[in-house]
Structures are given as C-alpha cells and as structure tokens.
Length: 269
View 1 (cartoon, rainbow, N blue to C red):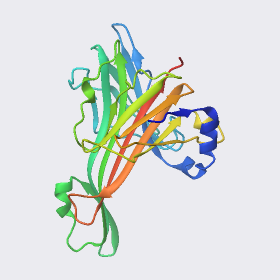
View 2: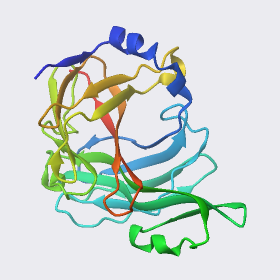
View 3: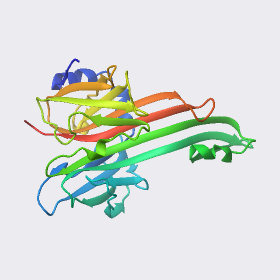
View 4: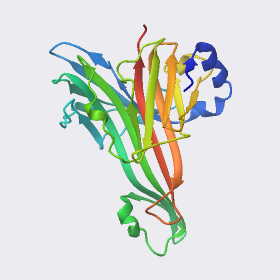
C-alpha cells in the first residue's frame, strides 16, 4: 500500500486545480483541544457552516442531532449550548479516561417538487416519503446519510467507540485519530454499510485556507480493503471529507447520497 506524503508543495500543486471548490460551503465542528489530561478536563466545541474552514462567516451548525459518547459508550450531555449568528458552541466535561466521540448523524430523505405550480420542499424519515402529495409534479427525491465526527481523548486513548454500526460511511481508525503526528504513517479504513469501501474519494484540507492563496485540497482514494495510508508533513487541524452516491435501496428511482466528515488534529513530532 503506497504512502502519500502531504507536503507543502503537494498542497499548493493540488490547490491550483481546486479554485472552484474554494467557495463551497462546508459543515464542521472544531474542538478547543483533542488530547487532554488531569481531573478537571473540559473541551469547548464550535460548529459552523462556512466557505473558509474554521472561520465563522455563513451560519451556525444545527445541533439537534448532536450525540456525545463517553469512552464506555454512555451518553454524555452537552453543556452550555448556545447559537449565535455565525456559529454554535457547547462544552463537554470529560469525566472518564479514554476517547470520546462527538457526532452528528443524519439519515432520511429530501424531496423537491411542485404543487399547483408552487415549488415545495420536504424532508423526513425514508418510511414517511408517502407524505408527499400524490398530485406533486417535477418530483426529485434523494436519500441522505451523513455523519460528522470529532474525537477527544482524556489520558490514554481508547477504541471502544470505533465499533462500526453498519450504517452509511464509517471510519475505522487503524491509527488512533488522537495520536496523529507529523512524519509518522497514518492508516484509516472506511466502510460503507459495514463493508470495506474500495474507490472512495477522500479530501483533506489543512486549517488556515483563509490566509493562503490556494485551498490546497489533498485527494486520496481507498484501496480494495477500504484503506488509505499517508504521512502528514505539517501539523494543524485538518478537515476530512468522504462522499459517495449510489442508487437508493428504499426509494425507487432515487439516489442515495452518503457523506462522512471529521476534524482531526495533527501534532508536531
């Protein structure tokens, strides 16, 4: 399996061909830290949808489906939730040793149609698609499965939360996501509905794109086992995204759009 090095030169070279994506809206969560120690450990997380990664300038991330899992799999309540004009935020107290998973997982269907000539939209669970009026015209329906994750560790890393659920795109971190440092190989595996996903296209973007001329997207592709291997040459916060589109198994004639994203911190060696 080949190793792709993420050098500054590669960032700039790839970025020259991605100017069109610089204006794409990206949804993300940004933790104040990913590795903590001590008895009084807290993390503050910002969430937003923006053009420039980790910069607040479009609208806040909706937190209705936010789920926080402790290292033992227990549900943890987000504290001090707030939503401003451009960002959302919340705090998490890390009372257990190990790795916490913070995630937003959305599943369902989305439709556009016209009713008596007026454009309409609908969204909801796949099994309620019949709520769309039978008289609707110009109907376009998509099934959606999107997952956004952040990993935060207090003390020694743990992996109890990385057991796949078999739904949508999932990351199986062969290298722990809170143990990423420059100049050391990193291995990730991706699954689609619980099976290794060959040919998935990954995008990695380092923070600070607001302050450089090019976005600097890094593009990787999973092998037959759904794996990628790489070496980070530069430290920082990275946004990872994976997408796939395939026919829906639940809605005749519809497409199923799957996506996965995560915020990862790479520390200097």
